[in-house]
Length: 239
View 1 (tube, rainbow, N blue to C red):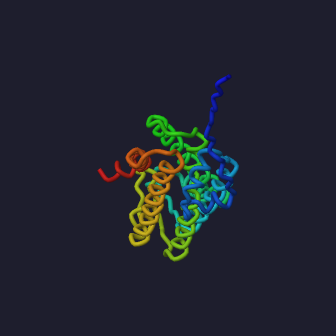
View 2 (view 1 turned 30 degrees about the vertical axis):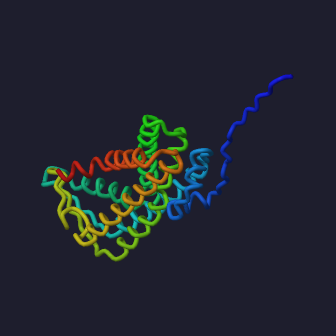
View 3 (view 1 turned 45 degrees about the horizontal axis):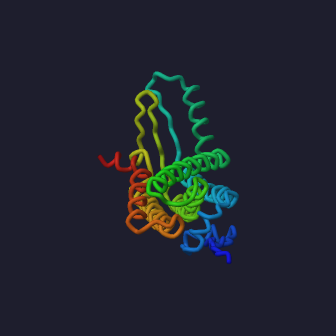
């Protein structure tokens, strides 16, 4: 009489999710979708979200730049023709929608790649699940907050008064409202950036808990380290 051994393996069911699910995840924060991003990353969804987020970020930048008038001075050391050529070039970079969109796209891409690399390394160091594509999908959830922040920046650009920047090319000094937006609008911009940063803190923590299947302590530690790394330049400016 033979003895039989029954071997059972537990397979985790893949949870289907659509592009709409991915785009709305920063607001819904569904644990099942976080898990699905890790089990079955769909980079085409990430790419669509990146292009959308960059478009709205670029819109906000473009609206603000439309209110900025640039005047270049050379202190008598630079010919007028060179000053005019430099002014025209700056206007092209600051007011051309295509160039602004490309700048926003490259900036968002760089931030998300850095976020994904740091997140992937931290998750692996703490024995979490998922590969680099999963980390990139989580980093891409920043695109929806970027859409909302882009719309808010566009509104700020719409209501802000015209700003005149006077740039002395011989010294590099920038004058006119301290070289930036009026103080009240500057505070609003910083508030928007803080909101997006805190939003991403929640997203990363929940992604670690329910997506990468990590405990509360490790999820919190990863979230704090990632937040510090991404805001390192902000901390330096405060010193």
